[in-house]
Image (cartoon, rainbow, N blue to C red; front, top):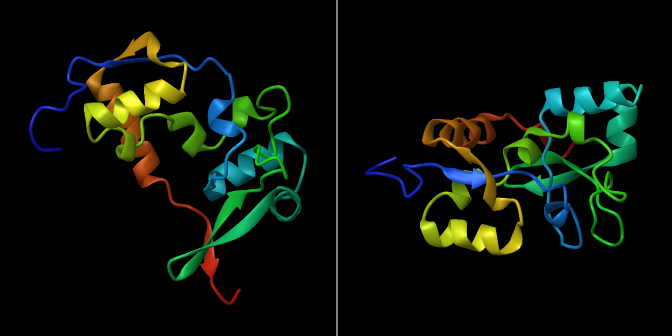
Length: 149
């Protein structure tokens, strides 16, 4: 990152488990193989069974990416009065709201804080911790397959 990031002195965030990021809006929760295996294991399911029951393949560029399904309400398939898989939630969920797309400017971060009650309050995360979370999200390899598969 060029220059000094706006979060040089850290940012406050503590998940309130309010589920605002999980509910009532369309979106994708992309899964790595490790994410899918961890959730499947926690549910005593084989990976293939888990994918069939709880996931969908999303067309993305020249491939399909694995994502959690949504309910007809657009809530995450694992939301029911809170996250049913919180301890095994995907990397994408664990790293929220420290995605590169949300750390580009103070204006983008303020947009996050207007939606997420945990952003801007609670624990002060250091610049290094924030960048480690952003890198973890950025470097996570999502499960894919070819468009024809």
